[in-house]
Structure formats: structure tokens, C-alpha cells
Length: 286
Image (tube, rainbow, N blue to C red; front, side, top):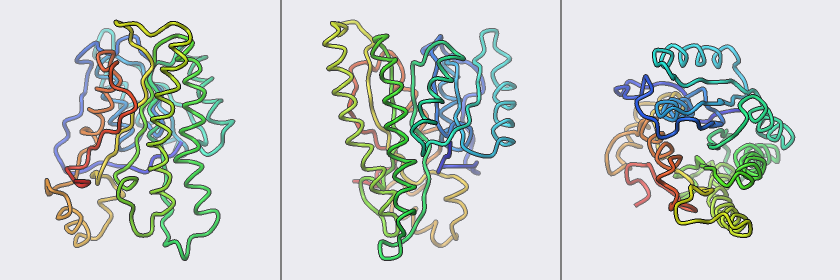
């Protein structure tokens, strides 16, 4: 499973390196694109609160294995340290999405949190965009999130608890030259988020599982802005400075800042937050 936000930065690393809380103890979280960039930061943030992480990836088995080894070293110092499993799959294929969810359920016995973080970019202006350029990005970024959520939500509704969190993009709000496919896919996640949130509540209500003190099943989205990753850092310095000038806070975001919002939305205490879109973009969309 691919991840369009990858790599490390020179910005100080404030990611958690051990289990520091128990808000997610006993929970199992599937994070697509969970071994790199924003996805890796999300995996670590969830684990820092005691979650067991199932990290999805699409290619780069060696890099994924390296992440797993680093993860084990970071968290094994805790007596009840979090664990991580790896799950390879093609998020652009519906059957593979369903297979990965089944694999996580078979291995861990439950699935409490799904983070649809994986995504790709194939940038072309509309005039030059080929059919496959359009279809592949929509298949991975939007359809993949749908099929994974469909499979996960069935399990969550049956159990009466669960969290689904989409990682969209500020580009879904603003659009961008050369990214019609990416913008459409990320904007599509907003509608998918709100519909899934309504349907989850509807099904729980039919099953008489909506209570004043229940955890429930919630669905929300996070929209990162320009986050310091390899993809962004590879831009020419002049372009990068231009991007920073567009951001009211005048800097790039950190992957860990996105992960904190995901961590917040995944917690039981966030049970009254559903169908919402959370911007993490330094005010870029204001």
C-alpha cells in the first residue's frame, strides 16, 4: 500500500519513542501507508498510547521491514509495549483491500481503528492527463479508502465500536494546477467521510447500540497541508520558499502534527466527533 507523504526532515523530531499512555490500550489499528512519512508518524503515535499497529504498505519490503525493526526497538522497552505487523497489498484493487482487512482480523482478532492514509500522485495538467493517470489516482486514493472502510465498518458496526479516519489533503479544498486527479480524489474523501459517518450512526441506531456513554463508530477526515517529507523537500529551494510564504505560519508542517490529530480522533473520548474534516495546514485554507 503506497504512501504519498514520505521521508524524514531536518525539523526537530518530537515523535513518541515509547508507550506513554493507555488511551488506546487493547486496540488494533490498521494504518495504510503506515511505514513511511505521515503514516509512520501515525503508527508511532497510536502505539504510544498502547495500540497494536497493523501497518500497510504497497512496495519496498526492505524499507517496511526496517521500519518494523525500528518500531520494535522503540517500544520493546515497555513491559506492555505496542507491537506492529506488516501487511502488503495493492490499495487500488478492491479484492486486495478486503484481503488485507481479513488478514488483520485473522492475525489480531479485531480491528478498532482504520486510518486511510495511503495515496499516490500522478501530476499532469488536464490537457495532458491520460486516462490511466486519472483512473489510477482515483482507484488508490478514493476507491481504496472506500473498499477498506466498507470491510472495516461491517466489523465495527457489528461490535458497536470503531474509528475510521481519512487522511485527505488541503488540495482537496483548494485544487492545484496539474493535480486534477489528486484534488478530485482527496475532495471525494470529504463526501465519503460524511456519508460513512451518517451510515455508521444509522446502523448502530437500528441495532439499538447508540447510548449516552457508548464509544460508538465514528468517521472523520484530516487534511494535511504542506508537510515536510522527501517529496516536498525534493522541490527546488526557490519553490519551497514560495510555498512557505503561502502559509500564514510561514513553515512546513511536521508529520507528527498530523499524527496528533489522528491520535485524538481515535480515542474513546472523541466519541461525539464524527463526520468532521480537520485541517492541519498552518492556516493555508483560510
